[in-house]
Length: 191
Image 1 (cartoon, one colour):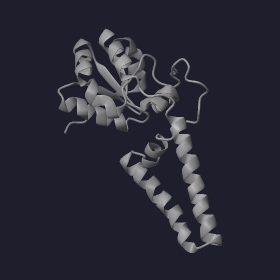
Image 2: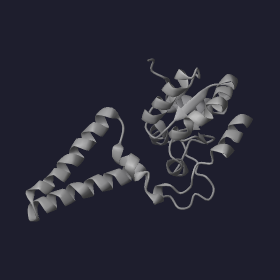
Image 3: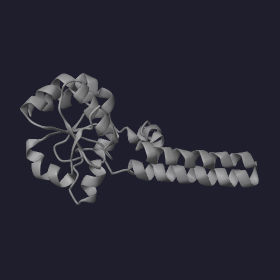
């Protein structure tokens, strides 16, 4: 299987006016800040959008983005398997923002919550501390909680995925609204 083409944030910003940008993150992540003009088609709804993405790809280049590049890489492979050429943004919206490029937020998105990475750090740190404290004062076996989190963090780094983020994304505060895929596809058809 081929590796999807990538654009770095500087290249993408220069060409933004000629790209159809598809953000495959969850609606909550998208609401927290996305590349200007990006359309939110969550990864789990990508199959339903394939015909419209194919049409957009016939009109010009499609750029797929996520937080770090892992999900967008998976999305690009799915698109390639379906005969659709697309590129991914190297480093995702994290790299985009780190280079000083602005992020848009939908109207009515409300106050900005904590980003997913910050939530993961808080949760992982809290569970590690809890495991150490319970291991010290209740039973040594509770230290396995801390070891489990450490192992999960190593696996997360090696695979460039995050199971804890996937779990936290399901919490109500991380799902402020459902993706309106029909409205997004209508916008995609109009591009």
